[in-house]
Amino acid sequence: MDRQALLDRARGRGVNPIVYWLCRAFVQPAAHIYFRLSRIGREHIPASGPFIIASNHRSFLDPFVIALMARRPIYFMTKKEAFINRPVAWILSALGAYPIDRGASDQDAMATTKAILERGEGVLIFPEGTRTRPGALGRPKRGVGRLALETGAPVVPVAIIGTEAVRNGWRFRPHKVRIRAGAPLTFPKVEKPSAALAGAVTDRIWPCVELQWEWLGGTPRVRRAAVIGAGAWGTALAIAFARAGLEVDLGTRTAEQAATLNNDRVNHRYLPGERLHDAIDVHHAPDLALGHHDLVCLAVPARELPAVMAAHGSRIPARAGILVLSKGLVAPLGTLPTAYVAERTHAHAVACLGGPGDAADALAHGASLVAASIDQAFLAQVGDVLAAARVDVQRTADVTGVELAGAARHAALLAASAAAPAGPNAAGAAAGKVLAELDAYARRHGGRAGTFAGLAGAGDVVATVMANGAVDQRAHNGSGTRLASAMWPGSAPALDEALDALPMLAAALRDDGADAPAVTGLADVVAGRVEAEKWAAAVMRPTRTRSRPAA
Figure 1 (cartoon, rainbow, N blue to C red):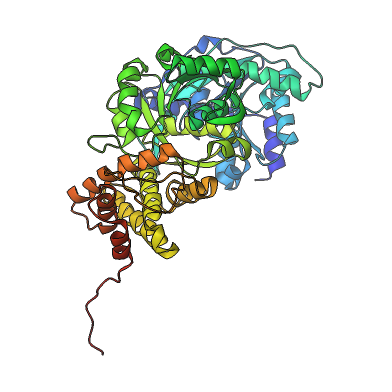
Figure 2 (figure 1 turned 180 degrees about the horizontal axis):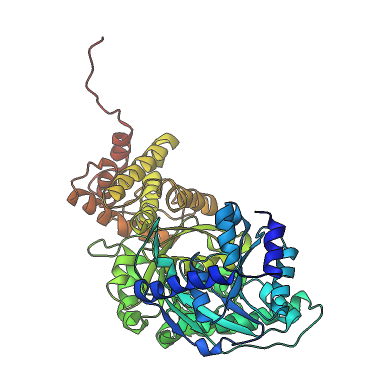
């Protein structure tokens, strides 16, 4: 149908009462039976006069279900693409929908909305602009604030939860749906409100929507974060979280370190030149009140995770999520860091962060990282927070792949360092074969193809080499003899993590029955059982293949 005709119908005739009430007579009992619909706060919807419902948006069903909160028709904007089919367009228009061009500032749609309100009707607005799922609510656009000021209509904050789980392809499955409305908000009528004023009103409306959402049990927005570990990345993440508008507590290993950071406001040892944001409070880690935080970040080496979880695991509340930055494996069983943490806390979700990450460069120029978790809602939370801090984040459920890629990065750099005396080709072959063997192991245990070749694997290796160059850190085996004449291309803590993780990686490959001569041979080199030169030569030795007769 013609778009202008649809807008004119919404401004003039409005809904088709016969079609509307017939549809409602079917939808309302169906929603109560099939979706076990719960409507809370219906008394806040005005019985007469204009009003605006400001709601979150999770599913295309939202307008039809939210309409059941009111005892009279309400109007709502729908993307113009939904009106391409003529019969569908007629039905939507009869039910109170009218088209909006979401890719532009659609003044015609806004004029239609104002006309409906001036007529004394109710309008449903989704300030997020589009469906947002999963996780916490999205960021609102200031259009709802401008509309409230220009019309003077009261705004009813509403939240809906459950509709995002109803649809599975073309199937509609039974699932509990709940809606809650809060008390109306009123604002003075302003002829031409400024963008700043419209934004301020939106900022007043949206927390009321979030209040209804969290009352219903929705994932809350991250407001407070605690970072345990004041190394380079712990400090960098604290600064990034503060830039994203969070209240941040940074926990240090010693009380002296906390006092120094509070006094200097610069981490001279690990992140010189970066001043701590005013929103960051520094504490000795045992003094952190973790019960008040929405996000807890563990920015400590894998070897320190047992002590950290013993000290703080029971103090992390169930409402919080945990972000783990540890790379490597946790002794003595070679457990992946997120699995180790998840077994020792009541937190509702655990995620890990990987990828090419030089802390100072990330703050100065940004970074592309990968976050992994099986909890998609928490993953969305982490992504939103880091995106607000101007960090590009890829999201994945491949926790195994991302964490093993982080451990493999250490092993690959160690392999290159050990094989470097035999030449650059040997160093490259050693690193490549170590990565390939660990990639195969990860895939056998649920890892996804492509993880090792992406940010968490190859990207991290390249970033480490480019950021650190030839750092004067030489690896030593247990006997104290030098492991490699080449210099370790990373930091001293990374070298420790590599030497810790390698024996556990080799043991895991042996227990798995994997053919992994590069990794197990490197572990023997580190343990002093094999000379590095002999191992490098074996890595470069041609593989024997059975000859085939000519055709």
